[in-house]
Length: 95
Length: 225
Image (cartoon, rainbow over the protein chains, first blue to last red):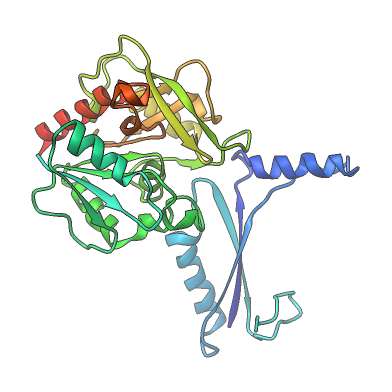
């Protein structure tokens, strides 16, 4: 069971990194780009026998305990039962 | 009176803090490694020093906040023990939930290393009770993630309960909400600040203003223990 956790700065929190990237994209000619937010992706694996519901519940617990800071961040969890990647776009297991 | 300076992998102001408290202020001071699950029984003040604990991985202070030593610090603070977090120590206190809010990347994306003027609010409480405010305190800052942020409700609560005792006077170097340079915990026994008072304790360092702040913290820690 592979999990991909995407963590973003909250919409109401200043994101200087996103703003700097947006400015650089404008400088490259992409002047219609807006709303750039820079986040982080955490990938991890649980044993194959773990059910999706349990895996998602555990990932939520991990986010609340460590991976995300609720004061400044939100998170999104994707579970990928097939560890070689699947139709939901989860990445293949790294070698 | 005993001071404990926490050491995490990547702490780099721990020796400065030991110098300031141990040599300049003459208080017995010792370092304690992050893997320790307990504080020395005679501890009166815990100092979380500046640096880049755990390489700032994940978020500044996030991993240090979950270390065994911080479990002991949390219990110590819950008993009313005095805890001072400087720079990365402030970030650790926020990540540990001992202080509200969070410290994010400086608004202008730059690492700032400079002296700043820090204004002390009227009649500060808690660990800063009795700190004179005749003039702003001149202290260095050196950080990339010092922009204090919290919801408007939390900021209003902190302001009305006099828990924002230190503000950048004049130039706000990092974009902190309401020019916040330091925050007190609910009981007044936990203080976090971005400026480095331990780097301003001798004339040779360019300022002695940090010394009065550290002496005030010591005095209040002593009366609390």
